[in-house]
Length: 300
Image (cartoon, rainbow, N blue to C red; front, side):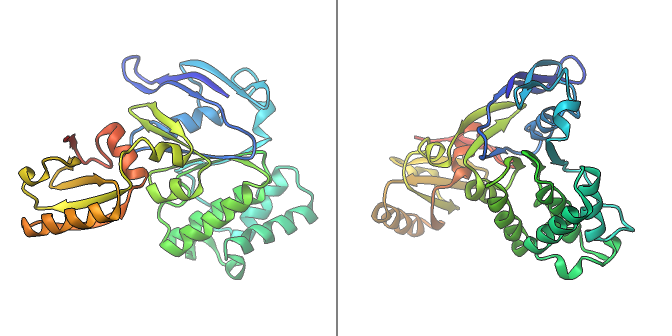
């Protein structure tokens, strides 16, 4: 799909640099990375909204840089900065969006209802947007994309600002959407990428750092369990694999028995400690050394 995609705005700093991305039909691929990693710029290029400085982009077998109009009607995109029209209702927005995409009146009514019901919004379909919470406004935009039936759907941080329950209703809808559409999702929520993705692309400083299914990425981190320790004297960590993030240590161990023994040792040394299974967060920290601004340094 994308080959060597790069973008610079000033001729010196690359917002996106040499990104290759091939996406299989019917999969959900997540672009995961901290703020400023280049996710949104890449999505703007992939949706033909922004021209790259260099690189090639092929969508549905077509040169999307030379013929953007031939692919735009086959994709749907909800940008991060999108805002629904304040004086409309959720139903009006989804319905009118579908009509503009070429749906018949009957189809638009049916699909608008289906999408709003999937996102638990049917009961508020006739409320004016400006009276809704920020989370419900965001869910209205997601409903537009879900209802579109587009072959390729781009969602740039679709659950930002949503509460826990609303976020999971979007996750459920995306899982169903994947049965008929290919999805490219951007997020900085670790658990979102881990739960939804067929493949994850870890991005940092405008480039791809690693890519693969969640299980394969998790295999890049040694051990199965992580001890998060605060206030531990570094000398007590000798012999353990760990990463230091500010005042926190992430210690990687192979099994529950080792984790339990390590926690007892750390507590006796005056630290606070908890145990969890490793996650994509540990992959990202191991690859780029930080997450959301935290500085990391590795130990043996």
